[in-house]
Structures are given as structure tokens and as C-alpha cells.
Image 1 (spheres, rainbow, N blue to C red):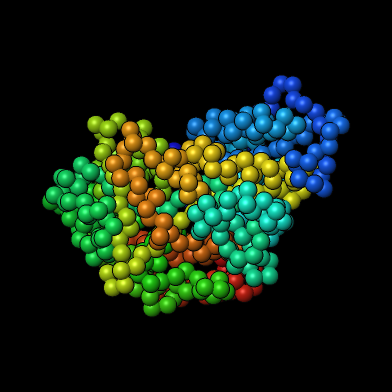
Image 2 (cartoon, rainbow, N blue to C red):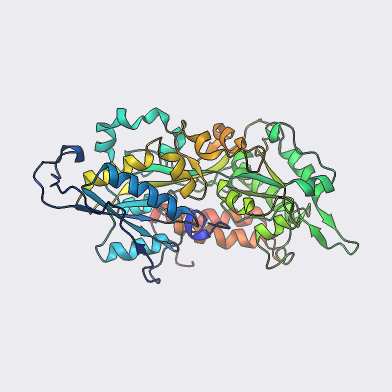
Length: 469
């Protein structure tokens, strides 16, 4: 994901307009042992009479560098399991759209990478196999207590309860992480700002606002020459909303909660960063420049995103960019904080001819010994395994100095407000979020959130987006 593309974790709209762009390559040894697989029993109990080689198709949305690491994992698996020929389907763009087209043609892969945002939707569409029986059978071998607890909740679903994190396992976590603050060391020094002590573990939202005011810079005509950070789209402000006591949806995911006093106050704080305090660039300022360019050139002091940004920044020479990480600031009244955490997962296709073999490959991917490679393949994200977090992520010879901030932030990770209507939620919230953000509109926050909740409540109750959208 060089600079992270919205088609993966951040902008997962569904359409069927793009032709399939997958490239396939086999990972199995040239002369595998040939055995017959009995579908009714686990794959290690295959019968001895030779008959055929299993071809297991595995779809993966890969980034630059990810293909080589996944190829290696396929090769290792095929060496250990010569009766399985892993056929990777590397899909670089519009991954979910390609899966939809394959599903429509009755050609779903045996094993699939999946994003947490669209996970409930695809479970409801019958794309994924219920893995609960396998998880129960292999619970000890899986070492379930070694998974970061919140990552397991991202791939459980119940058609009856319809709340993410409850019900059966339809997938297991792959890799991912939280979104936190990156800061440009040179900009902080130029502004005479000391980074918050202890990597920001102890700072709060009042401290954050003061830092933003100090790093923002203007010329004599009042034009911004440097901003604190660029305002992100509606899901990236989740840490502001949750930290300040607000929510997107109620706990049972049945109603919108963006119009509560706490949510309105938190969103107002966020909008004020641009409209009142003038620390976040307006839409016309630095137009045409992406976050990486702005950060490298010192046009912004900070940016909030995940560990997947690290490979991009590390590719910039160290004499051009010096950067480090900060924890998200706390609520000054409660001392609490929450940030958005998002993970990718892996699951078995509901129509697979070889579900047992597919499950064995899932176990291979989540195996603690393979997780450092998996995390590196998935844009240098964090492992889903506690035991592999440091070995798979920390790079002492590379910046930033305080990489451990991503790992240490686990206590305040929070789930995204995901439902099976996630793409439709985007449409409704986007419409009014943009009207609040744009300086030439500046829609009243209470009015905008009331309209958002009107749309979301209809969607969550009726299962369809209101006609006006």
C-alpha cells in the first residue's frame, strides 16, 4: 500500500465494474507425492492410495513486496504438504470487487484474505465457511490465548445476533494494527516544541491542541505555510469521537449514536481544529499534495495512520525526513482513550471442494512461527499473535526510534462500528461529514449529525439505504 489505498481498509465500496486482474503462480514442488484426500476427515488423515493432487486457490490483496513473502509461505507449506498445490491469486486492486465478480460466476477461491470492514457483509452473502467446528477441534493447537484478544472478535459473526465479535468464527485474524500519530521531528524542533514525554503516553487532548497551535505556521498575509495535520475522512476521526466519550452506533448496533451530546461535542472539537483554531489545512491549502509529500516536506507536522505507512516513510532518506511516533492523547477529564484498530483476516470459501485442506492452510498462515512473515507481507503490519509482535514488527536498525508505541497501545484499541451495511454507512455519513468539514459550508454539527442518524437509523432498521441517497 505505498500511501494507503482506500480500496483496502479505508474505502471499501462494492461494485462490479472491473475485470478480474489476478495473476496466478503455483508454489508446489515439481514432483509432489500424490494421495487422495477424504473430505470428511481432517487433512492429516488422508488415505494412502495415490489418486490426485489438490489444487488450493488462495486469493491475497498484496502490496509491493508482499508477493515475495507470500510466495515463500506457499513454498514452505507445499514442502510440508506435497499433496497440496497452492495456487495464489494476487489481486493488486479492487480486491473486494474482484471477489464479488468471482462469486457471481461461482468461482470463489478456496482460501481468502479478507478485510474486517466488509467481513459481516460477505458472511451474510454466504461467501465464507463457518470455521467454528475447526476452531473447536484445533483449539489447543491454535494456541488461542496467544492471539491479541480484540483481533479474534473481528472475525466472529452470528446471523441471529448480527453484532461483530459475537457468534461463530468465520475467519481468523491475519495482521493489521491501530492508527496513531506520526510526527516530523524537524518540524517540532523548528517550532520549538518538545515531543510529549514518554512518547505521549501521558498527554491529553488539551495538550494536543496546544501542540497543534504551536506547530501551525502562517505567512504575513495569513496564508497557512504549515499545518498541524490534514483532516482525514470520517472513520479516521474515530479516536477523537471515542476518546471524548462519543460513539458512531449504540452498543447493539441497532441505532445511530452520532447525535448524542458526547458525540456532538467530540465532532465539534474535531471540526474546530480547522474552522476555529486554524491548525488543520483547509481543502484549498496544499491542494494536490498527498500526506506523504506534505509530511516529508514539512507542510504538516503530524499525520494519523497505521503501521502500514512505515515502509513508505522508511524509503525516504534519513537526511530528508526524521520522524517518530506518539500515543493518542487521553480525555482530560476521564483519563481514558480509544483508537481505531483494524485487522485483515483469512478464511475458507464456502464453496471450496477441499475445506479441510483450506483450514490447514489457514492454520499455516496464523502459526506464530509464520506470523512475522505474514505481517511483513501485509505492508509491515502488526502480527495477530502476542508472541510474534516484537519479532515481526520491531526493526532496531530502522526508524522510528519508538516503534514500540504501536505495540504498547493495545490497551486502548477499539473496534470499528462495522455492520453488514458498512458500504451504505459510508454513503450516508460521507454526505454530511463533507458538509461539516468544508470551510465554505461549515454545516452545523448538531444539524449534520441529526441528518446522519436519520439515514443510519433507517438503514439499520430497513436494511436498505434511504431513497434520497
